[in-house]
Image (cartoon, rainbow, N blue to C red; front, side, top):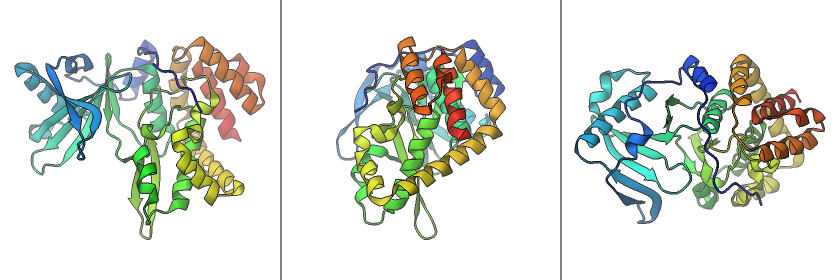
Length: 340
């Protein structure tokens, strides 16, 4: 069983990281900040369709503040989804703003509706944290999925990642007769590999989603992380391997039942090959990002010492023992994983 820090330390965004974000169009002039959203007057528990508490609360704002926030949210959505084209914002309205009272960061989730067809979408307003931003950017650069986010000051705007929550998938969808279980097992092996190579930790089942895409004869699956707070933060190597979390046991069991060692290694090799292609295609940008990380404290000295020791033993290479920051550990670890 893996031990996760009960409360992760908040790491402010450094000036070099802000310069990187501006250079790569992640910085935006947004009209509403995270602190503005904390000024709600009351909140009510948000229940799901079965009447169960979701651990989110719908927040309510008074008078002029409500109008200001609603107008600002339409602009933010246009910046996030339409590269700042504000011509369509008139028909976008805020249907609901929820605050997550469970967890460390207390994010806000905005549900925005297109009045022409009642179609809705979500995005999130969070307190900007360096390690989370590194996690988001590495997801964009090294994973097969794209992720859009914007930063201004101490505010982070993040798009919604669609999919079935991992815990719900493992406890319900996995048992459905039309699931292609071999493909599910294959994707989990690949997801496990992606998390480990880029050192994204704490992928318990409720921190990722499963995106199901109908294929012409069957279904394809993509596991996507939705929580990036534990990017290169913890000291234990196994925390970066989803296979070691207890609530992932159903899919780990599936992998052991349906795949042999040779097949697992094949899928690991396939995923590392794809990651290596992405890594070297955007190598200069990744070096710029990790240069920011090398000069940014995003963990504790104790955790840094533990992780460099464990990864040094894993790779059989004492070079990692010279690393003094998580950024140095991450870059060396990625190169060693992908060069193999």
